[in-house]
Amino acid sequence: MAFFQMSSAIIDCNMNSGYSFWLWPFFDYFENSNLQKPFKPSNRTLGFDHIYVVHLDSRADRRERLDEIASYLGLDFDYLSAISKNDEQILRKYGSADMDSAQKACYLSHYSIYKLIIDKGFNSVLILEDDVDFETNITAIMTDIHRDLPASWEMLYVGYCFEDIGEQVGISSSVHRLYKSVAPMCTHAYAISYSGARKLIELLDPVIPRATVDYSLSLVIREGNVTSFDVYPPAISQWKAADNPSDISTFDILSFSLLNSTLRFLGHNGN
Image 1 (cartoon, rainbow, N blue to C red):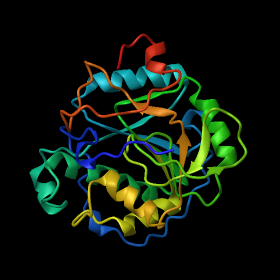
Image 2 (cartoon, rainbow, N blue to C red):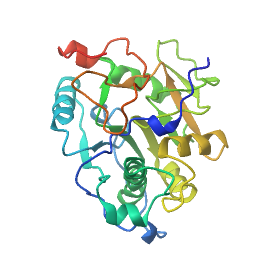
Image 3 (cartoon, one colour):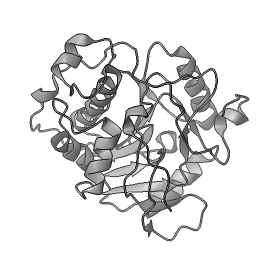
Image 4 (spheres, rainbow, N blue to C red):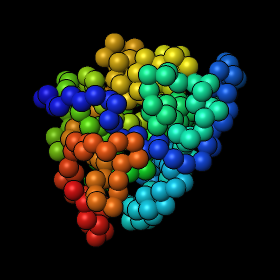
């Protein structure tokens, strides 16, 4: 099933402001002796070792909503402050001049998490941006998805904006099923395995990137360099509301509507 295509220049990556938490030099990455640790994934992390949220410290409203979601769904979020578009020192050193400062900050923030996955030895991590909403039965959905997810997976899109759905994987008959990725866009809800993180560190170049981070990931998937899958329909979506403006674009970003929105259930009004 084909969905809309859109320039990644307007994808909301929420990197317009915030404190620069990750100031380590990206190219100081070397082979390290850290082995994958025997983490025990739980329902509180949706079957992954960890959940990181790329968060703007200036958007306390978004963190409040996510804390409310976490409390209701019984999830554990680890908030990481995003690199700021105003951090001229680090943005001058890394990132193509073809991207604006917000897009550079977005790219570098996500790239930093790939390195963090390797440094921590996580087997798998779910990466979220701070403007997301969840299906109310997200835990049950992900339990089914993990049953069908091949052991060799490297990326898993739990949410995305645009995609051409590929071949179904597994035998699940539930509403949310697993499919091979084709060219997913947006970075608000995707998971990476340890081996996937190692590949992305090598495939993506923060100094001379091919494109914005969402489009760069789409390219490496399309080229067959990373084994990636999608949850369809998406189980995590971007939250669109009058009181939740984009931090990177004034354009209206298309997104999937959830079947049973957690934020709506909790009394929030969105688009």
